[in-house]
Image 1 (cartoon, helix red, strand yellow):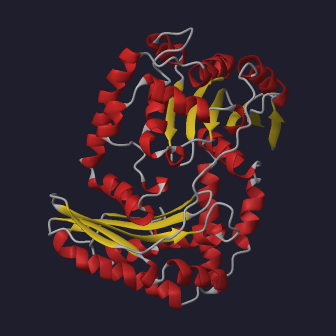
Image 2: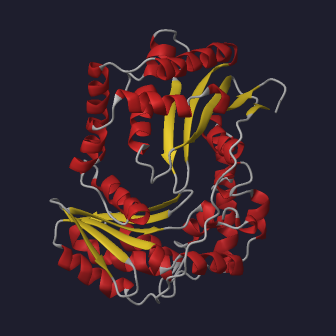
Image 3: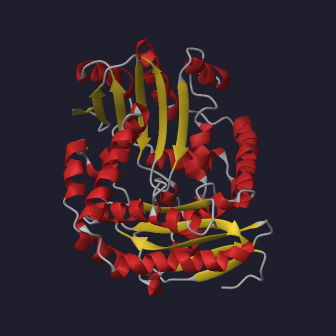
Length: 411
């Protein structure tokens, strides 16, 4: 059962009491790379790095050692729409984790010396991504689909812009976005809500009230594009995709089920059977569906030998054609629904994953559906729903394609 509380300053708390000696605590901020202005690209991610570099009362070393010395897991990551800072600790150190998380999120001082050192770290991170085409092509595909919109910009930013950022730039973005009305504390631990409230009020109630409205640029005007870029590696890589349901669209469950059947993690996904098992073409193969607040992105990724890429693309389109023209049988639909529910159940066995998902759902929906309700929504999907969704999202005239290979670049 999920329980809720709101501090007087507007920070929301969601808690689930769960047996076990390990507690999970996170601070999820409704600010990601799409909230950056053109002259701020990469700042959301850069700040996620810098909050560990010292606060008003702790040095860099003290921040890093405070939880690590008791065997805890302290981490953070940035997405297009939010930033998560979280810790997993033995329950006895829950209060220590809350103290540190509140300190680094709201009281980091961003020393100039640390800013310059961390620029080098992030620039190396950018280089490492570019050395991994299977990762980099997804970021480049975002730009193909969303173009100049903030959703199309790389979360890491660019080396050129990163070099120019000052402490003032960092504080400007942090102060505008790390505000109580856009923050959720998410907690999974073996004690009642009352204790979680006491701890949250002790360490987070001093943050000043701020209910400034969020002003995100909506996305519109999608235009399918096909691009080939020269990338000198043994393998060729391709991403094919389209915009899809946003996070508030009731059809998003049908889109998630459709994606899972096509290229989800199961070895019997349609793409895995068609390309790997039957034809021995590709080892790296998957499809993904990512809903955002006002749009969504569906994509298929494949990496294979350059000579085999035309055949791989042909087989991908053949599978998409089947989804657009052939309804799932009753048995096939029930099997797919059972598979997705099973995968969801397994994912929730990780209480850290559950804690992070709780925060995301609070930011987007203001509540968390119990897993039984999600199961019900999955079971309510019909073959007609999937056929209609396939014809909308898999329409070949609406698909964009990005290819990395050794051939001459085209647009």
